[in-house]
Amino acid sequence: MVRLTLEFPENQFYFTTQLTVRITDINAGKHLANDSMVSMISEARARFLYQFGIEEVSDKDTGIIVTDLATTYKREAFARDALVFEVGMMDLNKYGGDIIFRISKAIGGELVALAKSGFVFYDFTTSKVTPMPDDFRLRFPGVNYIHSS
Image (cartoon, rainbow, N blue to C red; front, top):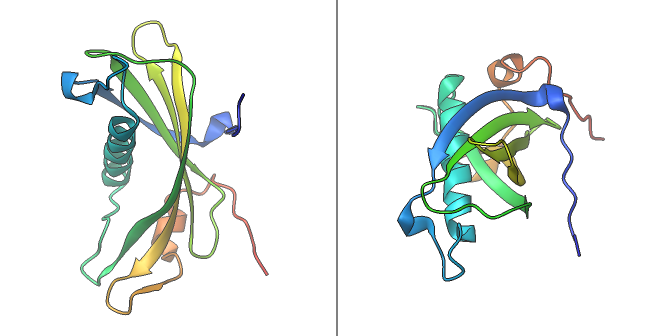
């Protein structure tokens, strides 16, 4: 029974990268382990941010931290499967937003998983959440913005 449903707008994916499932990513069930999927999602996120010139921690000690991660699995992936990670963004707000992922097999295009990772901007000097820098928001003009009261 599905406990979580993730749905993403098609026009919010801005980046694609490919990662290969390593033999060390396989669990006792002989498929991609959950902890390895989380690591692959983290790598895809880092590549996405790098592609857009975004440092995870700036020279001013402000950076992005992950606040949550939701993943739904659609099918298994196995050792040596090449996986395509489509990465995007949605639901930006004053402090952060969601980075979204659609993960498919490179051969055949079968959907393996969907994931959504919440993030906020964080000042490591004061150890507090800080507003999103204007230059970050300007890099993604097509992303929806949620105004909170």
